[in-house]
Image (cartoon, rainbow, N blue to C red; front, side, top):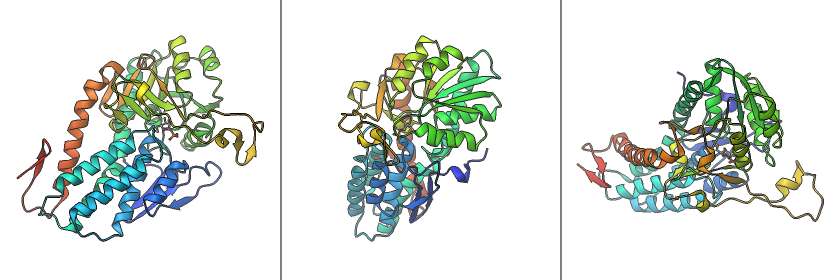
Amino acid sequence: MSNTVDSNLKAIRYDRGNLDILDQLQLPTHTEYIPIKNTEDGWDAIKQMKVRGAPAIAIVGCLSMAVEIYHMEFQSHQEIADYVKDKLNYLVTARPTAVNMKEASDWISKMLQELTTDSDLSVHAFKELAIEAAEILFEDDVTINKDIGRHGAEHILNHCQDKDNVNILTHCNTGSLATAGYGTALGVIRALHEKNRIKHVYCTETRPYNQGARLTAYELVHENIPATLILDSMPAILMSHHDITAVVVGADRVVANGDTANKIGTIQIAIIAKHFKVPFYVACPLTTFDPSKESGKEIAIEERPHIEMTSIKGQRIAAHGIDCWNPAFDVTPAELITGGIVTEYGVFKPSEIKEKLTAKKMEKDKMNMNGQMRRRSSYSSFKTIDNGMIQQ
Ligand SMILES: CSC[C@H]1O[C@H](OP(=O)(O)O)[C@H](O)[C@@H]1O
């Protein structure tokens, strides 16, 4: 199975020392790539939503650190570890709700600090470790998304009546423009389409940034997936008039009890799906799981500028003087996620997500760290990291 994605749908272009992103504020009318030369550029692009989507935010943030330090000289391992930690913590502040950037910041910072005492590594080799850690996130993402797609498609097909005519409703954008490629919830749709099981996809416009109208519709049309754009106010009439097989959405943060933060409007769709007995799925990678928070009440919800509601492309559409409320996300309680949480490891009930994903998270962190160790040809002897200690 090819791991490449359609070059027209690449949100991120990277070679060591160089990073460009597709300016998603210009889509679908203009395709323009802009250079990201350092973490300040990365922070600005994430804040302004030139790049968005929980996984893409983490990838671009970490790669902006990688291109910055690539062109720098350092005197010691600790200087690199401290510099990288400061820059990654700064990138986390760009948008507070999606957890992927914080997860990546924590893992890379911890890995580097573990290795500061390793005298086998030259300062240059140590700097390369930091760059490679960011590259791992980028390189692994498409494979992870294809695993999410496969598990989600299999679960939907195993639990639906008409397996040859699957109708899916999705919200916001969770495709190649929200990840390194293929997508999460849109990855499930792509996997069903590859099996020739999709009858029709319905995507909401997703006001006020219009991720659905501008980005998801763009991806679906580009790949000839039969789809219809609907207003954010239409999920109820859609489910009352059409046989919707399942709702599949993405996530910005899934917490220990399975509550999920996702694009504003998600909880409304979940409530409507429950009323019409349509299975509601959340699709996300392990990096979106935050076991440190017990319930959705603890998730910080980003509020964005009012002008994003009151104007479109500089054209005012709301009365001057009206107050506005513009939360970018809402929290869907676990009991409304009736289909399950689709991950690269399988589909889990919200109630089992803490047990299933906490163990996977620890396993993956250790694997990534040891993978980093193996990548160091400069090591005189093979080392592994167990329980945080370097073993000869
Ligand atoms: C796989 S993207 C996950 C998530 O991110 C989007 O938010 P935004 O466009 O504001 O970054 C949306 O909530 C997607 O479901």
